[in-house]
Length: 564
Image (cartoon, rainbow, N blue to C red):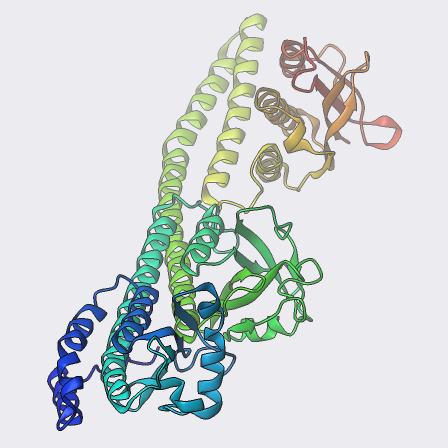
């Protein structure tokens, strides 16, 4: 944002005003106290519009005009420069006087200012200027005494206009400073939210709840109708709406700005996009025209990396975004991008700490627990060889078998601890995926996995916990006893029980040796108990091998709210 021009020294202004008043009439000299009192009161307004209202009223009273108007130009560099006035303030003794003020400004723009022309000096126009910069025009018309405006009137108004120009410039500087402070405070608040983890614990690709925080803040700071966060679309090359902040539902959430849109290449290249009329140049495709007015899109970029974009729009017919607002929005978006990168690095550091701890636990398990289990198994095998009692030998054999299975499970846990946490979805799907991946280590191959229906939405927490335990038991039985070469896992959330109730069904089928007649079936009994506790059932049948070789375990339970 360009630096504001320094305000002139009040002593220089006073000196210039004094030189201009030398040799003036006794009438004008008598009016100087009122002029000085008016000048003193000009700069005390809380905002620019109040200052303008005070100026126009003071000028009218000072020269006895029935009506007056001030038209203020847009700040240099504003998007609306050259498209009319930034603000207009009028004063009139009657409604008719106030309605005619617009004509004063039009006449002043047509004839130029300063001026005391018009029919018999019927109106007076002077510029509001500080140095070489002109802020606007002050116009007055209709003397109360019916006479024309005099040279004394013009001198008084020119001195007042000079002081008014200083007051307006000062008010603009103060407003710009307050606006910049608000944007800086907003950027700090968003940065704290993203880095504290309160906005979500996912990284740049999702931001957790971060998009909602950012969208609401950019809407608030821009004094806009809507705030939008767009993130890169997976595989599409475009940008997708990740969050929308608005008073009323907009229907924009989840919509995409396709790669073919002219705005996308500019945003991905780190350039802002200013849209004056979304109806002619839609902000977000065919769903946005007619809803919003002036719109601004700025990239969230850090270095050469563009993480997404922020968009904000005002109501239809609202004021355009000024040059300073565009610059502040761009700086805000850059700060958000830096915060996202820092949050991503912070999560990476936390993940590294977790991985290091997992690696330490895995080493301890391998070096201590597995070795002790091996030693215990060897002692039992030695005792088995020395025992002459068949019953004791059978019990020892079962204990050795259980120890062998335990060693396999500990090795599976060690492998899982040594792997980086896979990017799996949350919920039941993620837990099932992790169990199947972990089972691949002792099996020596990856079981196939199929989901049917909305598993995460339909299956409740308790049923999901039992299903995962049943899956773990079934996979453990497969690698301990089946000697299978292929295993297929299916989780079906659209199944039905025999009585017609909606259910979730888990099927684990293999092509192994099958369940031997008279063999131990404690694992299958555990599966049945888990299902029955939920009002379901468990069974086994022919497997995937030729002629039905192997085993297919089916475990099912009613969906939440449908059980007994």
